[in-house]
Image 1 (cartoon, helix red, strand yellow):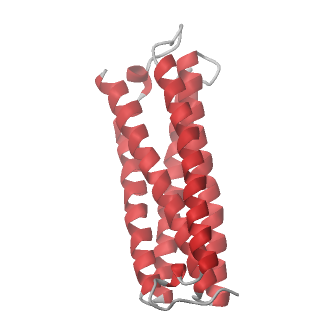
Image 2 (tube, rainbow, N blue to C red):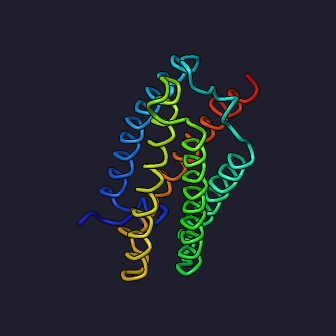
Length: 200
């Protein structure tokens, strides 16, 4: 077992933990490439609407603003959770993580309703190249959020069972990096998909 350096935050205290965090940053680099590819495809196909609707015809900003508020707030809350973890406030950390996941679930609920609305308006993944690229991008992000909810629940269960130690703190911190990453991706989606689509 790696020797702990108590001068560092709990999640960084062993060499193994530091390597895990470094490795996760490398994983996020691969995720950045994935989403960069999806954004590129979307930008190339954004005008290929065929006989289907364009973004300005289907995008409705109120649900998107709700989604953005929920995800940005969840990112803030998980930051508070990491802070609580670092000062040894286990219960507060768990509460912040639970609130984060509840907001994430709210985000997914609004997104599913948004997809249902698109389908009712005749905008499906097979309608046009534009809609295919849009739904692939949004669906991939949504799938990541769904995975994040399951992962976050597992983290909370481990902290409840084992308490805060170098291992559980490391896992919780890595999860927070993942959640912040999803938030950053959403900011790009909000700015370059929805806003650009509505403003033209």
